[in-house]
Amino acid sequence: MPEPALEERVAKLEGRVSGFEGHFEAIYQRFAAIDKRFEAMDQRVERRFDALDQKISRHFVWLVGIQVSVLLAVVAALVGG
Image 1: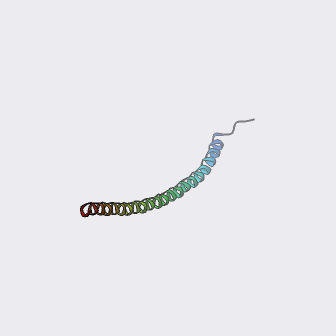
Image 2: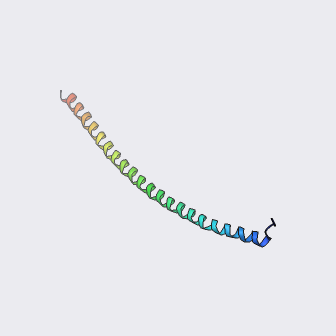
Image 3: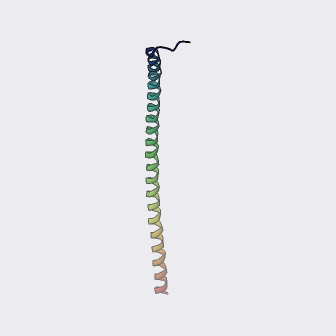
């Protein structure tokens, strides 16, 4: 079997490489879409953590307020009694 000419071999390789370019472009597009999804998910998680932080802060203020009220009631009972 005779060896293919250099031009034929180069043409065959060029055809294969041009096929790879389309595949690489599709991979890049999929990674870009995944990156956008992760960014959106990160923003949603950040909003949830912010809401949770605000809720915990409100509950802490209520807890401290109740404790101060109970302390004042106990002191008033001891002083008055």
